[in-house]
Image (cartoon, rainbow, N blue to C red; front, side, top):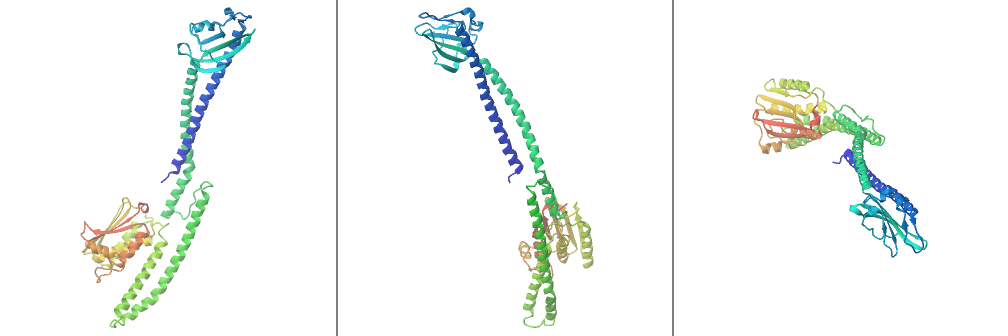
Length: 437
């Protein structure tokens, strides 16, 4: 499942990193241009100063007045150099070049030229014609120190940018979580809706999400109305059929000896089975969401007391209720479900029935008896609607099948097995953990 928060954080983080990388590259390029422009400007000034000291006469080699040359050109390997060339004449070099001669360069600027002692030079070269003589003047400056200073500045800028980027990413994460906080509240409200604590969503949300909340509320209202209409219609139909069905059973009591008695009785029982099933489905459909059973322990103790009276205290029924305050389900559904299971257990038990409720990776309802139990084949058959292993006893047939459908309506499951404590049948009902509170 894709996380919206992670997706937004990752997208914005990549965008910020790209912006900072672009900024770092751009700053580096601009600093290099700025450094180069400064050096070229100084070289241009140096060239004008050297030309001012130059004496040129017709058919005589140019003469430089060294007394007026800046001292930096006089110190060997100072990083500032010049060289004057004239056709068919030896080149005149600054003393800072010592015995090294610069190459012949065309007019313009040459970058990253390796000079004396591996210095990195920028060389400005220009040609002049003075008194009919063609001369070429090259002026150079070492940029190694400037490059080192520029690199140091870029490193510092990169460190500061990385720190600023980290702070921005933290702020961005906080802003995203704050922006998504209404969705967390909305999820909590959906859980409350499932538990029956509220009947609609009321969490304040951003305007972009508000239409979704309104549609969910509208859908909830429409579903409740449809379920209620369906439930009422199914209930009315089933109750309308019960009266003539009761009359049919009464008439059959007076015709037990007839040839078609057994066949008519079976068909009438099938009709009664379908009526009970539809009534159960209609009731469950209306209550599987949005209800709470507030005092399950007390209600179950009252139910056990009633069943013990029905069975004239022949069966001892024990209840082990472990740390469950409320159950997120309809009270009537759960009472019918559990009551049906306990009643089946009492019908088959010899002396004892144990009911256990606990919350462990889900709500567990375990009902055990000390009766004869069931084989694996019988356990599979008994969940089929209307099938009973022993026709002499009512129970372990239609009741379990209806209960199984009601359990499925609450996203639960029904398991049958052998009781380790009592040796009889063990019925284990497991519901999602969200039902136990």
